[in-house]
Image 1 (cartoon, rainbow, N blue to C red):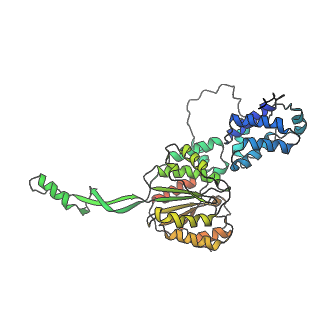
Image 2: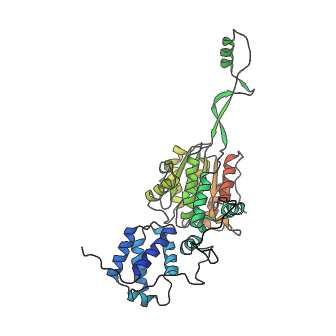
Image 3: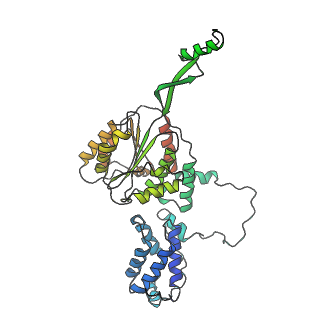
Length: 401
């Protein structure tokens, strides 16, 4: 194996800077991949911008869901009118952000946070911070902004804050009565056995009557999360939410589906939510790929419904409902799923749009069989979902007009 020749100029420094930007934006880019990219650039050459993009993407990308983020970062980072000449000479200067090139915050907030950590007007990092008399982790306004921020456009700091908020969320599940009973302090059903035992301790005198009441337990929950390309960002955060649910009092079963159905209940048992979600992402082969809602629901109904569902269960279906193909089969599988559980709640991130209308064939096929149709794109919508799970109300089918 030939030793790699030293890279002249600032090319190696800029490639390392670019990898650091990708890492800050959320991609796992190790030092070994940076070294591989520098070696590949020496072999492949720098004849065109397309070759340069292909070499870097081949060496730095390891998952298909990062393709869009990589392409956006490449266009912003390597934007230079004389880029080709500089690359051929391998004498690239240090890349600096030019005025007017800041990406739009709404579309690329994580990428903007990685490329421009110090926005215009912010004080330099080397200046000592002013002494503060009062410091709070999050002000009221910041908490409100975080509650309403869309998961898909969150910055890296907002994403971490949202995960911490999910871990601290207070969960109260709907209590359902069981066949068993437990001792009670208030009058109700008399417990004659305990009453007679108490009388025996007091010489046959009746001092007080003992009571019993029905035991309750949280309603079991089943999570079916769509992990297709359009849903991967939302599904990742909702898997953190499912991890929080699974470590509460309720019995939670979780599944993810793209082109196939995968059970993830055991993978989410880890105490650390980041480790648990990372295990799910590594174990699922079709993450951020295509979607086959009909096939996945058919597989769940055929193989898992009798094992995980009963008349007391609540099912959370997390999907945008954009299905191609035969929607009659989708309607049949959705009806079968709805009849196997007590409540079917559909969480759709498309409801974040104010002018959303159920015009897609897949959405219209699912809606008649859903008890509740709710958004799931920010922390506020998840807080509303917790309130729905906590109260006991009769299901109301949604009717299309």
